[in-house]
Length: 315
Image 1 (spheres, rainbow, N blue to C red):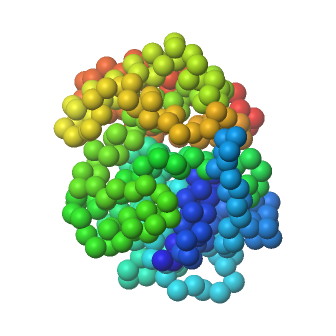
Image 2: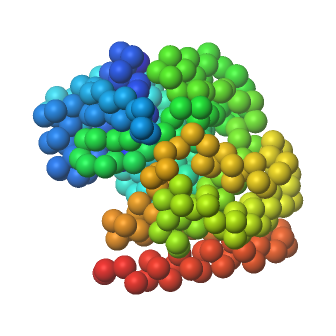
């Protein structure tokens, strides 16, 4: 399968590296020139993490943007979108030369609303939805600690059908060691994933703690569970069928299987002096809560604190 990953940061490298390792033709798109040079020269190094972790190198192609590819490629089978939410429109439009009659586009981004935007560019008939609990941490250009063991990825058609094309993608992911389920209730799956993002993302960004330290603080667990409960109440008010019944389950799921030193993407963004995706995660819960009349004071506070941190970033 020919696969492009738009926004191949830590998570995109973890997923792309594993897909390439089992024989898929993978192209990583990352605007960082040092990253591209390192991977094209030495390959992508994947570390499993932990004391007994293994390390291996995968050879694949990395480019800074679609236009930089010297030869016009044949259309891709799958384009995975993993850019920051604010960059989605521009980056997907730039990838239109890679879209053919049978190309599929799938967002694995954090947050809500990306599928509608991608569909407006490539056509709704080409769009799949997906959420992943996998993680990654880039320790240096081209070297990534992967957090994929036991971490589920859920994909599906927007209309809930189980089609041959989404089943084929699920198989490709599973063959690569990415535990993947094809869902007939992808909206419920997306909200279940939002609950996990709500549990830890903003808290790590505010406290600057790695996961191992964060999970040692009972007060942070209580705050996380309160934020998740608010999001659950919003989902139910929307008529979304979620599988999560206990807020603590989202807190536990967020950290399960990840190394002590793991950092959520929100913290990684702030450490790079970049704005976060808070508006598409906790902020999405707040907006929907206001629309439906569901109070979300904990999420409102987390959003406000992240916004304050962002305001202090170098301009």
